[in-house]
Image (cartoon, rainbow, N blue to C red; front, side):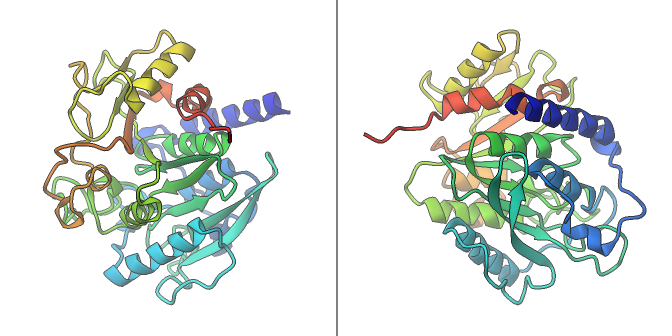
Length: 343
């Protein structure tokens, strides 16, 4: 059964690669309707993520709407309830009619997940109206990991990669941004070299609000936010995968990303996996707003001040297109974060 499911998921991954084709290849059916926005026919987390992705505001659509402070606060309250194990509750007024929260049954593994997703299409164009994103919680998790896809569509297939790894490693949460990073022409008020829909470089997003609540929820407990990014094949040409903590500091041999690198090479000895300080790649996510926040830069300063130190909880992964198959990553992730048996 597991081999059969792995084959099905791999075929889904390949089909998404062919469909997505990077930044230019998003395909959305012209027959999309309001009813489709609930993704009611999705039977697995992977098909749910694909359905949601296909309904996002695309590049140049001007379909992203920056949430207000009240809307972000209400979103955080919902995230907190979900992390506490609740899923059957009424959404705050500011989110009602825009979002839905519901239990989702994955027919492949027989497990239930709590899903917060956008469902409103007032314009009737087949895309959601706000581009706020998706948050999923596994209350039966055995690993305190949050798998995050900040650039769906733009970083082709990373949203499927992240949700499959979330599912197969029994991790706590999954977070996907709700729009293409260049959905709007307006520049981010946080980092003006990026657009306002770019979840990794703006604070006025539900993606950022979710990470704020994750930090608050875990407090001093151990957890990791893993952001799955994609780079072009000709970026850092001698590197297949680059791991960092959002800061240009060479990690120790016992550091989490050093351990993850070693585990990747055990399973894939031909891969070129680099870390900060190696000189082969400089994509260390030093301007990533969630990375700065998790690395304890004050919330009001993350737009302009890089982290001067790191706590190891933020993990940024850059990958060439051919290295995003989730099944290549599942065992290395399991090995890096083994399940601790009770004494």
